Length: 144
Image (cartoon, rainbow, N blue to C red):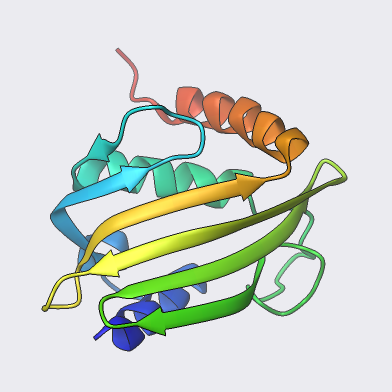
């Protein structure tokens, strides 16, 4: 099951999943961010965080380059799949700083993502991503 979910995740990142995150995420998905202490519960907040990460972490990828194309921007370097869980290691460069991390994705029997956990290293990258994610989330907030 996880193989199909990961394939859909890659399709989403490439802009080739018609239903987008709504198609991938379970209504009660839990998102664990490297920059927020408490888990974030639900499809709406998880979507917000994943979209903000997509704006923050593409790094310095050349215009039009495909995710995973090795263009110096965001790319997955390894993947381990077992039962209902995937661990996808990624790397990118943000403001000249190397960012390395993993996405840990767990799905239910229907292939919907029920848990999405992101871990990042080194500390300089965590601090930079925290700063940029906070700014991006602030910009993405609907007007009050």
